[in-house]
Length: 267
Image 1 (spheres, one colour):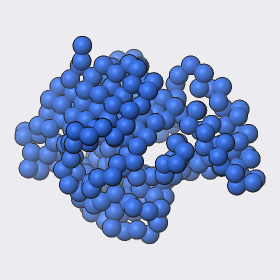
Image 2: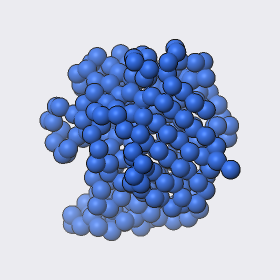
Image 3: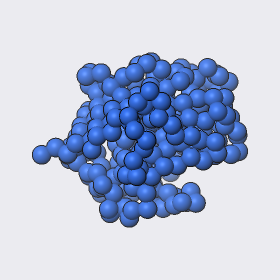
Image 4: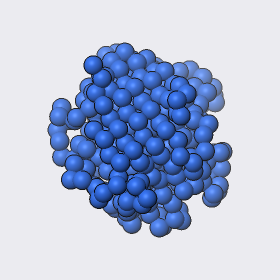
């Protein structure tokens, strides 16, 4: 599959434009944008290729190679300061996931993802020890794997310990075991064009930026996933202390755009 966004979006894509979100072709790139987002109102500009498909019919599984060129109107947040205004707000990215929600937003299953993912503060999804719970990342999440649920009791106990004593070390390790997450924080300027490459194999996922490998993640998901590219104004908090919260953020004009999308199956 190859898309260079020279022409209007094809009917292959399911298009989502919610809360002022807009999908536009600008200089041979797909621009996902909104002029303004409001706290308490969901805004989303998105394409995907799973639409109303059953999850067993999602079109992509390993081995495959994905290559995308992308940039954004604003840089990634550089600190957890929620008052930092000159940065992209909400979440954005592209890659493959299992869309674990219903159309109403109900959580139907545990998440699976192999993608490039951005989240701004106050998002704090601390899935991997030593890596912030926000930022522009290469990321694998593999919760639906044999033995993952065995981590739930020790995760709950260590989260209680963290809440009572402030010692989060055991909880962070159990959170990673539960989520199956592997991550690398990307040290690149999101406002410049970069080439993002993912090789998704059955035994490992390899992520590169401009030809330089940034993450090797063993044991990625192997079930069918769908491709998605998006920009929205959501945040999510899931910390080792057991804090869980979701919401939406306000923002001014911002956009995230991709071009030269290629997905090829590997033998």
